[in-house]
Length: 247
Image (tube, rainbow, N blue to C red):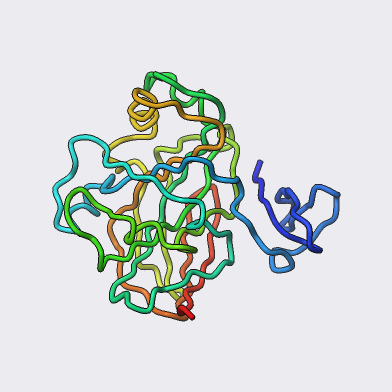
């Protein structure tokens, strides 16, 4: 099932997809453009992967890492489908990153990769923008690269795990103003979803509602104010975002 969180009539509703419409938790059917979309889950601890696709590492002139490069993201970075992302006035290079997001469904500690999928409740999509001006070195990124307000649209749907046959074989695509600019597949991750669950849970507890952003393939290019960026993940949907200028 595809699930969303939206604002309609001044209230937050949980919604599901039905025949191309949104069915709110009160039974009302509405169109996609009639609501304000929120992140489909309320993120708790969010882990993000750097350089988890070898082609993207090469694109940034870095070697592929020998163990996961993980950083944390704050809650103010996240916005929903059809949201607006602010491009900082001083940024000279800001690029999108289409990423599969893994939603943890229950407490996980010291989980083997063989059992990892038992702790995943679903998946969603993310566009984890990076301000490349502040990209410093292999141990990237610092806070200014990846923790800017509004710079991580997420959604539109949270899709139940049982509805994704193989999360390690999903096509990823990004379009800027209708032009295909990025294309890849989750099968090309350096560290797979089970690898990441095993790695993270080996030294800390993962909790229900935590999210793992699994990295992006090559194809990242600079974006400009006014650009419409659509990140699409097979089986999850098209996440629409527009870049705006800072005040």
